[in-house]
Image 1 (cartoon, rainbow, N blue to C red):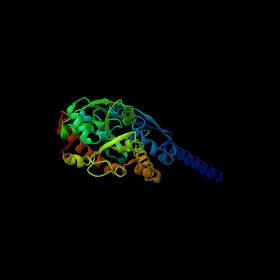
Image 2 (cartoon, rainbow, N blue to C red; image 1 turned 60 degrees about the vertical axis):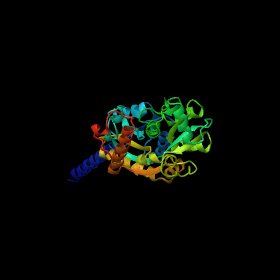
Image 3 (cartoon, rainbow, N blue to C red; image 1 turned 120 degrees about the horizontal axis):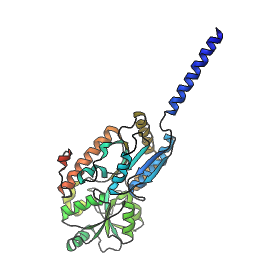
Amino acid sequence: MKIKHLKLVLTIVIAIGLMGGTVLAGGFPEKDLTGIIMWGAGGATDNVARSITPLVEPYLGKKIILQNKPGATGAIATQWVYNQKADGYTLLYGAENPQLYRLLGISKLDYKDFEPINVLARGVAVIVANVNTPWKSLKDLIEDAKKRPGKINMGSTGPGGLPYVVGALLKTVNGVTFNPIPFGGEGPAITAMEGGHVEFSSVGVTAAREHLRAKRLKALAVVSDKPVPGLEGVPTITSVYPEYKKYLPWGPFYGVWAKKGIPEKARKKLVEAFKKGFDDPKFQKFLKDFGAVPMGLSGKEADKFLKHWQSVSCWMIYEAGGAKVSPAKLGIPKP
């Protein structure tokens, strides 16, 4: 009888051990993850990605191997992540651009096809120029552009990118056009501007701040109706042209997404890990120094923000003449 009981106990212990091993083996993550950055090295999205990731990895217990896949205004990276399994092991480090893809005919995808792990921060655009250009103000640039329509080289990141949208605004409000020169991200565009290959561009304050501090670029105006901390001496675009007020506030944002449909346990683990990384004092200091506004949104809050941003931006571009298809036809409501 005792032997039978002992066998029974051993059987139960072994079964529990096997079950426990199965649970552990099925835990997320079991291997390193891949993080795809939709813009090139040195840009704002790249900087944000490389700042948050080391702070998140300890909470996942695995590495996130970062790769830059620039091109097509971020659509190459977005499509690549979408083509992977919805298992949580492939993350998209992106900016605002996918919310414009359908309007501009770049892709059928946007962030409705992805799970927002964390919308980390939003930024402000600043119009910057090569230090050797003759312009001392935004008005100087606009007046020159009116004299030389389509002749001034503008660093761009393709249709839907931040320079594209700001360029559309300048065209609508001031009636000026430029010669857009495409680059794989803000970083390469800034490098080209500093080298004199393009004369000006519009980039996120987060990407331009250190270059401005080092006086490798000069700022003409911030695309904001309020002064930007750290750039108080740079005029707001509304102080120069009040007509821009109806389009503001507007600006880029940065975050991390996974393909829609990932397992709930994986989603929760990722959201929790990125929330802890976001709350880390080191990341908060990075955002402050970088000139970005902390957000830290996930789930329904993130979805609400993304839909509102898409509504405002798509209608802004359409009314500026930057798109032929009305956002209404795409099911994007007018704000």
